[in-house]
Image (cartoon, rainbow, N blue to C red; front, side, top):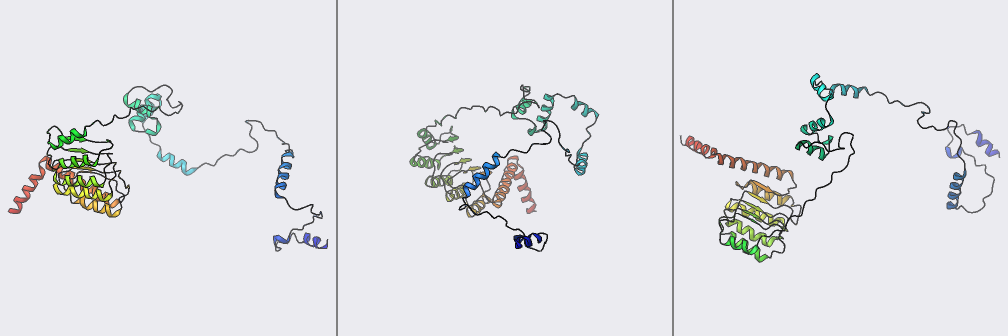
Amino acid sequence: MWICHKLKSCLLDNLLPPSQRCSYECEKKPTGPLNRKKLIEHINKQALETPDKPEFKPYVAGTIRGKKWIPPENVNQKEADEQIAIDLGDEYEQALSQATQDEIIDLAAILGFHSMMNQDQYHASLLNKGQPLGLGWDGITKASQPKVFPPEPPNDTNIELSIQMVKEDNYDLKHLNWNNIKNISDEKFEQLFEALKDNTNLETLSLTNTGMTDRTAIKLAEALEKNCTLKVVNVETNFISPDGIVRLMKSLLNQRSLEEFRATNQRSQVLGNKIEMEITKLVESNPTLLRLGLHLEYNDARHRIASHLQRNIDRSRLRRMGHFSRTYTAGWITSRR
């Protein structure tokens, strides 16, 4: 008891550690070992059975109890709003104040404020159909019903007939489309590419989603090295490796007649820095390529290819307008002088 009395007298001493300021005065003996689960259940039961203290002022809906909090006025924001305010003039202010909801929606559509309206309101304003009922500023926001489009019909191109027409160099065959045709054998690809070497009329070749591999890509590259009339080649969504794409890009440097080449979405989504730099050098050596469909990861390759393609497009436009030949002739005459 003397120690407890001394401890109580030292409670006001701030220099005493907290662990020594408390005195344990419980004289009851433990009834058994500690059971944590039962202790928590007892505490919860006691908390539920203990009645709440009655409130001095009963709760009434809509009644403010105590002092109401009023947010402080933001002077900086008020000054910024005053600076942003634009004086539209009396005529515009009067026109906007008397405008209806449909007229304001049409004005927002003309100005391109897409966030102020949904798709139905925007297209109705552009097509001058009138706003649908219940879609004003006070209308209920809801998703538009998606339009149902029928599936695309299967590609009914006759493979045997198209190969025969390419082999015979048919004048009427300018565009050949084998897109989305499944189960084309390698022999059919080889027959087509072999016929392409001597063809002089075909201008567009589309082989998207046909299951092409590196083996058939090499045959196509050999055909592109000898064909001088193809303008567009599309081999997207196939199983060509990055090395196969490089082989195809090299084949474009032989005849230099192709203007558009597309080969995205292949077996490897990432080409890598080495392959992209090699493709960039090949493109920069090609003076006739105008459009390239490839997913490039590095900014340097994208920028260099885009700049070179733009130069090719400008050169092609000048040649088409006749300025290129006149400029070259004038420069040659000046140098001769």
